[in-house]
Image 1 (cartoon, rainbow, N blue to C red):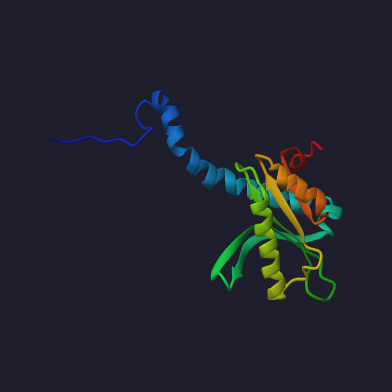
Image 2 (cartoon, rainbow, N blue to C red):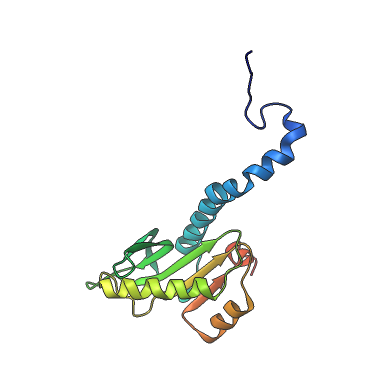
Length: 166
């Protein structure tokens, strides 16, 4: 007996579209929407963010991994904004975390503070005025809003801000 097989979604795509999307949604969000949103946040930081918010003019914006020697791990940074160097160490104007589908809270802020401390210890950049930026497509918790109100170096960037509606 021969068994013909098809991948999910190949037969009757209209009938199974809901099931296909249900099975693929998490992967699509993580592998497509998340990285695209991170790039949108980097582009905004370079081209549209107010230099007063960043603490200076960005020379370049990227992403990377910061090594944590104590925990023996690396911490990814979605947005790293580097300013113009005046002969000394280049200023790290801001580091940011971008989450398309997650409500961001104080754990995200604590993580960024820890990463900033690690970068300071590495002594490659001037982090004396580094801002922390949380970008979210889903919003922020009340505690995150309270933290941003009480900390001038923390900024919460939502979709209306990213798309110039504020």
